[in-house]
Length: 260
Image (tube, rainbow, N blue to C red):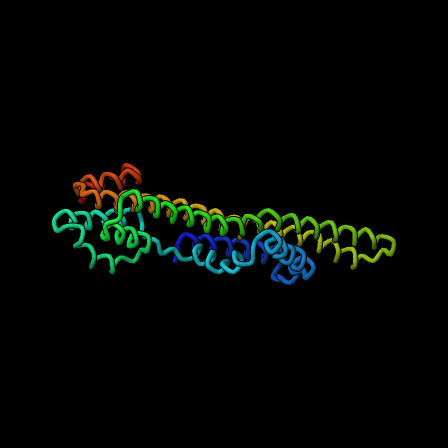
């Protein structure tokens, strides 16, 4: 579970719920508009279907899972694990890592080490793993694109709902029916509110978190790649550690080296 995401959702839900409750004096139903839901939610869904291929949309549950649950190894964990493997390879030879590869729970790292153990050239290993990184970037871009589309077009459909509500209100001016005009005005205002909430409380933060996770994972993969190439080259474990530590901030780097 991503604790930061959970805390953010709880704060957002609590603040929004409190304000809505106080503003409505407990009558929360006044903030519900079927027309607003159809316009904003339905409109946003239509946009993503028009803008993205169906196979990308099938991966949406995975995008949400990445937002709420982050299982990737941290940079420090990766450095410690690779440094340990480097020491073993230095002492016993790179073939001694064959049994350790099975226990590694990161497919990128295990695949790279497997290629090194199998005796592939450094150029071949680097080319293959860099293609893996590039493919991962494209997959992550699709996830962010989904939420960026909702962030962009959700408020737009909210504005359309507002205009529809205003037209309906003006159309009832001649009749002087305050109830109908009030209903249409409520549709106009609530549609704008739905669009703002969808964009700023849901789609925007999720897209930004996914982009940040993607950047972190790319750095971690680059770190793994340098570690794998260093192990294959037979570098001193200290040099392997230095190469990977270059990817993390100086304070963490000093603590890591001191513990090594």
